[in-house]
Image (cartoon, rainbow, N blue to C red):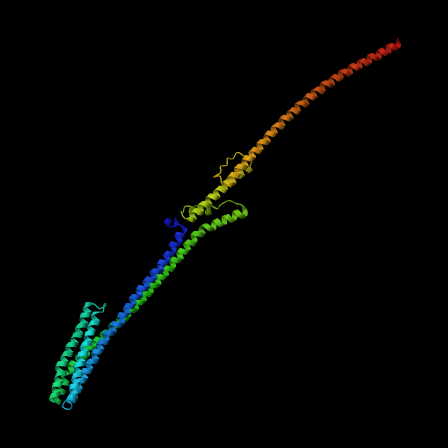
Length: 382
């Protein structure tokens, strides 16, 4: 996942949202395709079987009309030939219509995409067998019935009805079987369509759940990715602003250092924060050294724009200059004091010598006084 972490934040966000959008699009596409498939299945399940059933039922209806008309011909034989001619004509039309519907039945069967070829062949064969039965019914019953009607032989007409009963039963049973098969097929299609709809619903729900899970995971990952850096950084900056403590917890330091390895904006921000904290820590150590009285610290500003570095370097330089001047002044004061001390010593020595001279003078004066007194006494005696 390092390749993802190295992406720009904007790229991360776009990629994450595109992933969610892609899942939603996949959900929409799958839903549309599945619904189209289900719709097609329903169409086949409804329209094609209905068409097949319609063809079979219309065939049955036209055959029943032909049989009814044949019975009417037998009833009117020997009584109304004109009516029999009309019934015969309508009967031929009914047989022809039944054959037409059987042709439509064959088309509907052949055009059904869900029928296997063997199934199509079986159904078409049954339709053809009904056509043959109808042709037999026309030849052996309908055509013979009009011939008998024209001859006016009523008994023969009744015999023909009895003779045509097995053919009628075969047609009825065969078409009933075709209709039952169509009903079964339609029900099978409906069940398949329901299964397809259920499957579509299940797939849609699964994709929707996956999309939601991916969206939540992406959201949590992005949120965790940002909060994993912002929370410790915010706490650190708040601590620095409120207490001035530049100490960074080992856990937070490891986490922030891990973020600084990324090549995105967050990684660049983290690297900047790490560099800032490191620089401020270095400045704090230098200040602590200066505060301890060590002015030998060599401060190297990072650039001309390094306000703290330049200011600290200037401060240390000014302090060194100030203490150098103080040292020079102290040396000068010390020299002057030594001179004063030497003068005082010389003055004291002169005073001592002067005192000795005074003492000698005083002794001399005393001697003079004594001699003067002696002289005075001698003069008095003289």
